[in-house]
Amino acid sequence: MFTFLSKIKVMVTNSVLAGTIFTVLICVKSQAADFDHRYDSYNQLLAQVVQVSDDKKQSRVKYQQLVLKKEILEDALTGFSIVTKSQYDDWDTQQQLSFLINAYNGFTLKLIVDNWDEFKQGDAESIRDLGSLFSSPWEKKFFMLFNKKHNLDDIEHEMIRKWFKEPRIHAALVCAAVSCPPLRNEAFTADKLNTQLDNQMHLFLADNSRNGIILKGQKGEASLSSIFKWYREDFEKGQQGFNSLYDVLRVYSDALVDSDALVSSDNDAETKRNIIKNANYPITFKDYDWRLNDVANF
Image 1 (cartoon, helix red, strand yellow):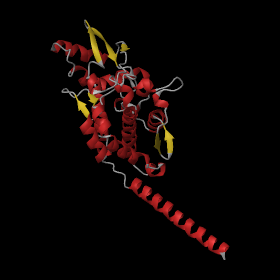
Image 2 (cartoon, helix red, strand yellow):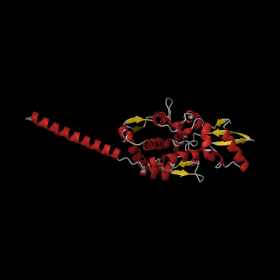
Image 3 (cartoon, one colour):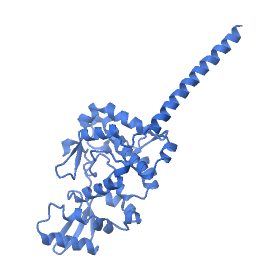
Image 4 (cartoon, helix red, strand yellow):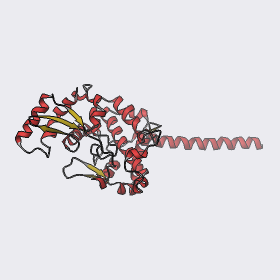
């Protein structure tokens, strides 16, 4: 009798446990299926903690304020983490790329927030200080994505750069440094992605502290962000019509010329346009400012 009752108890317990697990899995699956491609919560958070410069070319993060809103950030990132690879594969291309850009930028914010005490105490001044002797901060596996532990390099190099033919992402991924492109105060969304990426390239190239055409009489040179050196190959594959950096600068010549605060005359502007058009000028690259993109470093 005891043995029979014990078996019944075990069967009931296992049944309840199985039911609980099934319910949890259903809830998680439902949450992933209902993924908010408008990124309402994440969008509202960015609007509150990202400060854009008056000329719109730069931005900084109010990390001290973001720390106080850590739970909101974590909730948004949990929404990213519960998405399965099969769910992701069912999305259209614009939804997929928007998701990965937002995930990269969002988990970068998490990395800074999780280590904010180090910055407050002066033990860290840059995201690079969060690495170790054996690995960089971009190699730290500190978040879940597609049911696996991942790092930031995985998103950038193993997913985005491999899965998409889109070099403009280098003006959208922000690694929390002053010299990075500006972090938008809104999320990337599928319906606006092309416009947002184009705008990011324009803003980045229009910022003469990061990119510009330097005149030397009737000649000149392009002085560009090191991003264009590190990822030059991505701009030379014919993707988005770019076969060289000269193509990039030609497409965004208005950003380099019209928005350049150093242009002192119409003649200078015309000279710069001719230089860009002729595409026979040297290209140099600026040193990268790795200080944290905090409002204190505006």
